[in-house]
Image (cartoon, rainbow, N blue to C red):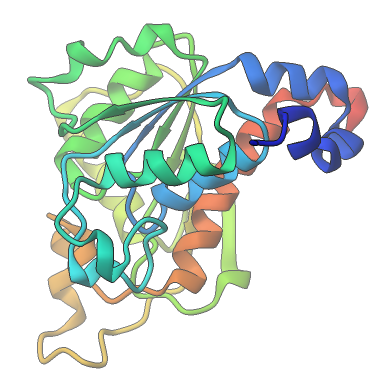
Amino acid sequence: MNPPSKDIFNRAELLLGADVMERLGTVRVILFGVGGVGSWCAEGLVRSGVRHLTIVDADDVAPSNINRQRMATVSTVGRPKVDVLKEMLLEINPEAVIRTVKARFTEASADSFGLDAYDYIIDAIDALKDKATLILRAAATPATFFSSMGAACKIDPTKIRVASFWEVRGCPLGAMLRKRLRKAGTLPAKDFLCVYDEELLPNRGADTALEEELKFDKVSHNGSLVTVTAPFGFTLASLVIQDLIAPDCR
């Protein structure tokens, strides 16, 4: 028999209090991208008491995902990432309501996601163009929005930081996003917090120069480790928890 949720989350409630746990159980969260960062963010949210979570990703599990993605194992290769992750999340809390969307967030598909229905929107997308689109769309909603900057080409999780989008420094992805948005003349309607890391190492196993990664068509083409991507994801999840804690409780 599955244990009741009140037993699953008793340690969380001891720290956060019943009121915060109630809010965690009622907020609606949508997470875009469940790769090396997003998959761990999803786990952090569900293990912390979030019950209503929509996970969005168009990809299937690939062998190259196994070193850093929560749902990637030899036995899950070839299956949709969102489906495998949902199964794992329901093993954590069978009472959670996990909605899966196997699709890519683009300008053409943006309206289909109903962003206004969510309390929190979390961005863990790799592709630059789609990420810029999500930033603009999410910032235009009443939802609280958090975004992950690049987690590749890093080995030291102690260098992970949180700052507003316009204050992120030392991150090529953040710089390229700001440049792209300014050039298009379409700035986000509101500021938002980002998880980032100033560390930037070369791909030692590649023959190409580091400049290749600055294209950021798909940052997952760069080397990355779970010891950094997972803390990125957990930090994103923690931002939701922190946002739900009243200032006088901090």
